[in-house]
Length: 315
Image (cartoon, rainbow, N blue to C red; front, side, top):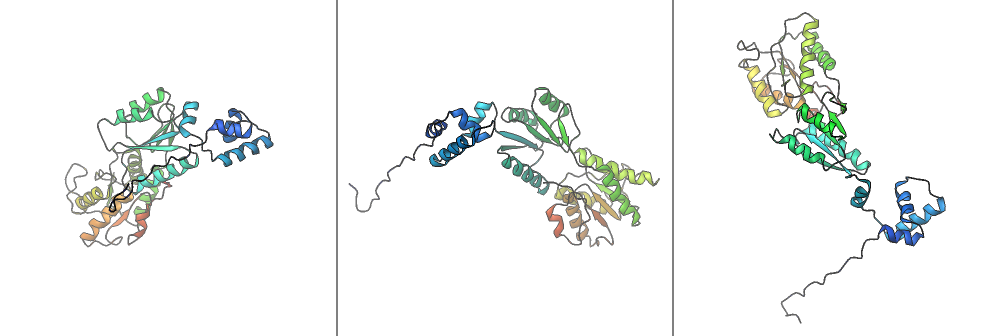
């Protein structure tokens, strides 16, 4: 019995058991192999038999077990993506593009951000044991670790990184584009141009710096000052731009340099930081200082004046 002020205890209901492939086979009077062939379209099946199997699947509400299929095929049904960082618009756009395609292909995605951790290579090896293949972006792990994974037979795709071993590599063109961008500034009369970024941090930044220098060399102009080092982060871009604009950046190792009239930023986040540094100093863009970026991230479309940037297909 139940007291007047006490709620009755709920009764637990068992949901009906999910239908199995064996029940579908019995319902359609076929073998489980035929059910599997119909689902995966892996071999021809007579049209009437196929219709009968599909009707049985619908009648019973059958949902195939992804885990069971993976075990049967010796696969995990998932791929892994290794990123140096998981914050910021650049990485989120790339991840969204990857996840969209993985979902369309029926695969799960495991994402690992290394964040400069000293044990990153061990973490990547552990992830490699739980997926059917890996995408490795930038210099998240050393070349030797990539070659070891390749030698172990792990399917690899390198993103924004030069090819290694037998791994495929996907990259956008940086060097010639950076040269054209710098030419654009030189054509507008800018001669004191500073590069903000860290060529040692990624192959992309290194190639953009090289293209920047190519533009000066091609015109037989003095080699530009060393880059003002900055990660691909707005906060660090702001700090680097402050040093450059205040003449306190010893970018060439010989002391302060004259304030530049243009800043070539290795990505849009650095450029957004540079906008903030310019605005604090009441420097007009582009009248007093021209600023360029790279990537054409969505956020860059909302700054004023509009940011001159190089678009690449992130997603």
